[in-house]
Structure formats: structure tokens, C-alpha cells
Length: 316
Length: 102
Image (cartoon, rainbow over all chains, first blue to last red; front, side, top):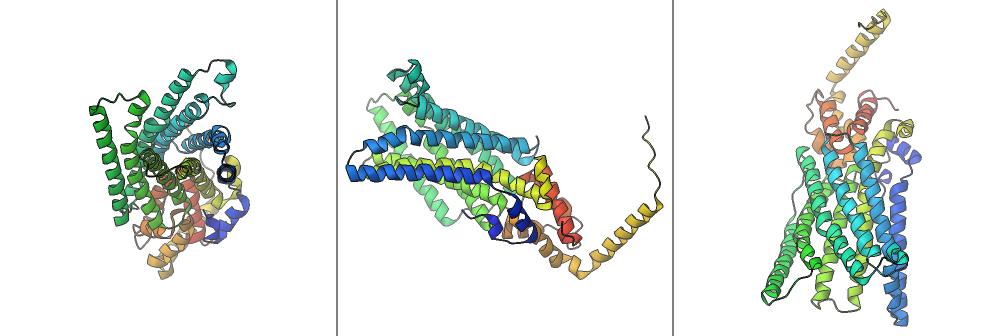
């Protein structure tokens, strides 16, 4: 991800470059890279020693911490963006919806990654309140919040963003390859729905977690369509502070879709063990991308305020 | 309650008049209209909207630039909020219209 001041070295851009340290995005990029590298080191140790505990331990403690930490960053940055917009402004409502989505993601991550597990990170475990059934309940609730709830609010927020682009006359059209990708993912959803119906007809009793998971794929299809539209729009506009936020958001959506397809491919045996474990690593850069999006929005607003006078930053 | 009457400064009024005349005279010159004007404004807003984004927005601006600031402020406020947009529009005035460096 390149930083903009290198692209157009005009007077005020250099001024901005000299006075602004984009601390937020640097922290998020560093955190994401660190967790990813740690995870890959664990993967290498597993392959060298043949002991899968390396990877399991990584995802139980540092991996879980990373996902929760990035979700907390995402929520904090979303709330700061909402504060920067006044009520009634075009993107205020959009960022409010994206903030609710981030809240669902953070609580969902906490429940599914920490409170449901039998790990040292779980405070319920230390207090003696944890049991296997409590863990299952926490995981089900966490997946519902971090899945359909989060994606529904994210979809609504991005729809509001697309309307702003449309109003400005900047909205691009989907390319043929985007339509092909959407058709492919649509086919995957149709196959999954057909299999679910067939299993129910054969007398399968779905668990609560499975029921909560049903809307996830259609919601992801909608998010992918929105993400692709945003990506095309930003690509057509050219590199700029405003577009960076939505570009990274569309990358996050693409990674989540990829992670979802990897889960499906694993469960159907298309992605055999140990290659299927690579799918677990997708969630770390995805979380990083979602945390970066509001940070880039905030940085764009700061750059605009700073562009005329660096002293303006003091008032923020 | 009536506000205090403004102090009279005949020099200030003539100064404003002179600036208005200067701006009007400048506006009719070819380097302050049409593509030349759009190009100068584009240089300021490109870092935010991107090259093509800036060009698309500036297509809505009349050749004489009469709706320039309004058009810019509307689009920029949508994406960056009113405060940040106001700063950028001021920058456009300083750099692209008045030819001043902040």
C-alpha cells in the first residue's frame, strides 16, 4: 500500500508529508504484519517438526489476541470518523452503520475467539465460570454477531457510501470479470443452499450455530458486489486519499469471501489437509484491512485540514 | 437589542472594491477560465479525489468558474465532512485562484 505524497509531490502535499505522521495506519499495518509473520513461523515449525500444536497454540493465544485487537482498532477508528462528521452529512449515517458493524465484529470476536475457548486468555476460565456448554453458547453467539449481524450492517453502510459516489457522478460500472466472479460466487451459494435443503430433507437437525450461518453467504455475495463496485470506482478515479479507504475496505471484503470459500472447500474435501490450514491465515489480513479503512478515512480528513495550515491539526 | 454599528473605514471599502475589480478582470482572461482554470484547481484536489476523480468533478464547473467553489464544496463535504471541505476550498482559493501559497 503506497503512501500518497509520493504520487503527487506538489507544494502542499510535501507540507502535509512533513507534518503528519500517519500513526494509525502504521500501527495497524505493523500489527497485522507481526501477527501474520508469527503465524507463518508457527506454520514453518509445524511443517519442520510435524507437531500441529505449534499452529493450534498460535491461533488459540496470539492469533486470537490479534483478531480481537484489530477489531478493537476498527471500532475505535469508526467511532472517531463518526465524530468527525456532523449529523445530516452524507457519510455520517454510512459510518454510523459501519461503526455498528465494527461493534458486532468486536463483541463477536471476543465471544468466539476468547470467551468460548479453554485458553489462558479466557477470564471466565480463571473465574471458574467456564464450562464446555458455556463455551458452545459463547461461540454460537459470537459467530452470529460476527457473521450475519456484522455483514448486514456492513452491507447497509456500504450501500450508503455507494449512493454518495453515485450522487457525485463518480460511481463506476462493474467490469465483465466482476460479473463473472459474482456469477461464480452466486453459483457456490446456490450449490450450498441446495445441499442444505437436501440434508434437511434427509432428516438432519441443524444446530443453532448452523442456522445462524445460513444468511452469511447471501450477505457475503451482496458485500462482494458492493466491494467490487467500490474497487472499480476508486480505480477509475485514480489514487487519492479518499479512495484509499474504500479500496482497502473492498480488499477486506474480498479476503472474507475467500476465507468463506476456503471453509466450504475444506468441508467438501476440495482443499485437503494440511493446505486447508492456510485458509485460517486469511482472517488476519482481512481484520487488518477492515481496521485500516476507517483509519485511512480519518487520515484523509486530517490531510485536508492540514493542507492549508499545519496548525489546524492542533484543533482536532 | 441592536448590535453596535460597524466603524466606518472608507479605505477598507475601497480596498474590497479594488480586489473585486481585479478578480473580475482576471476572470475574463483566458488563463483564468475554461481548461486553464480547471487544470489549476485539479492540481489542488487531485491528491484527494484522484486524477480522474478530480477531472470528473471539474467537468461540472462552468467555463467562467461561477459555480466552481459550490461544486467543489458539495463533493468534498460529502466525502470529508464540512470542516475538512471548507479547508480544501480555501486552499483552492489560495493556490489556484489567488495564486498564493499558504
